[in-house]
Image (cartoon, rainbow, N blue to C red):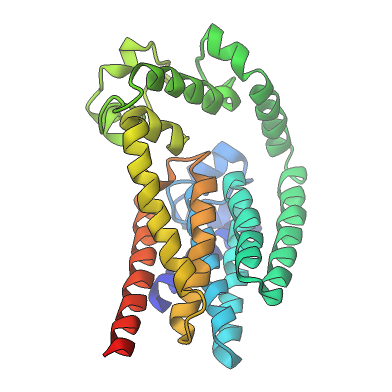
Length: 321
């Protein structure tokens, strides 16, 4: 866990250095082209893009907060410091879906656990995110223009869905467009969906699924891309039955954290508290990103739930013995 958290802290730190140092640091980290795309407004660290940095900072930050609440003394302070670095990386990533995920996850965790300390952490984090969001966007003319364009695009999404889509000019409507298209696909494959790997994911893109042409799915810049909405992809590919099974698995993961949140062992209790918040976070991220199809999110999320479940059942078996 320390190694995983250390990697996230290192990535977050590099992101902060990119934002502060500008083009020179981007060049040193081999990401100068990304600086040019966003005029230095969105820090990707060493990740594929800024959203990927935001996602790992959310999970790393929630892990650090959960463990910090369970432990005490020097270890707790070190974990809170790690959480602060993750928060800084999250701010400079300018990943709005990640900001939202963190802003929802911490209060949800405080509500479930009833922890006053967690409520304080949640309130402070939301304030930092709000101030950071204003600072990141309003100090960059490029990002201000992008936010205005995409905000207007959401309102016009239904209109552009009917007329069609091409190029970067209406990138803001793309999620609206693909969500509506996914519902159209789901309507015709209500129970079982199109089948795994047939629509919206990486597999469908690589193997050129015929579903895209059948439904006149409009590509982005001439190419099909994985949908930036995990839940609509899941519904279209798996139908109501497959989605129900997936949500059942998600419920089991959440229940594992919920049951273990009052464990006596600090490690298990910290994992459970942070894990509960991670469930809320990935559900939120899934509304704007591939999330649980992305190994950067899916692997740590499910491994986290499995670790909590395993430790809890080992504890129960030892106690019964």
